[in-house]
Image 1: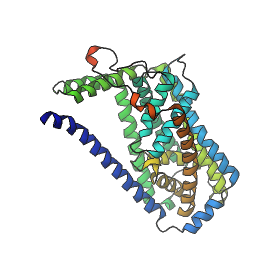
Image 2: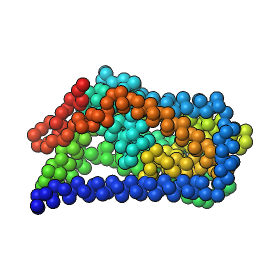
Image 3: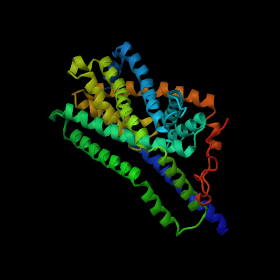
Image 4: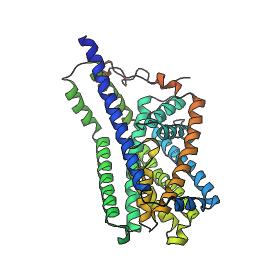
Length: 367
């Protein structure tokens, strides 16, 4: 009985924590949606959506795929020179991950993306995981720089209200802390690994062994990625990534005529929206960034004097066009490649004491 309790208790705690995380995300989404729709004339929202220029609507849809492809292009150099990894491999994996994040809780799409890339390229799972961490670091740098540019070019007017100023100030602080923390881990990862080993040396058990194995494998994968000749090209391509992420907002701004009505440059709208929305969607929420996306758009467009009805209509249109079609595309790729079916083939971590990377299979996925 005691052994049975020891084997089930550790698994219940993470499961309970995940359900708490999901509940918090659903509450956050519901609250932000309520705030977005509160005291809003729905008739005006629908009228604004119907008035959008169809040509710019189609352009926004196409631009959503460009954003995913640009991420795939940035992913390639992280695997090293002459690696055989193509931008198409990255596009398929990014699309699958996007579909997972759109439909599943706990940002499960990140795991599906890693699995899909390991499967397509036959690269070690830990290596792909390390490249994804570097991606996240580059994205934090990108959102920080974009936010700084947006606020420098488009200062917040008094008409936007003190609340918007406070929110944007908080976003800047969170972004700076996030960037500093992750970059510090990249440079101090070996020290962090030694500290973790010293702490875990006092513990025993199967779960502790797996944590050690997974951590060693991950850091070894990171050693193969965090090199200047791989980071520098990816860093340059991050500029391209964030430019493409601003394009759908800029196109839809033209479609709604914000340049004519409010004198808002479409590219300034694109830069400001991409930066502020990117920070808002970091907040735990329901799958598909429901609520956080709308709140980010409304906060960003208030800087340009766009009323809540127009901002809400804008957010609903851009969110649908950049979420649903790419997610369906990713679902098609996942079904074609059998990614969900191959979840059972994901590599398991073994004890690092026997040498190697700590993976049962360092050849990635076969077949």
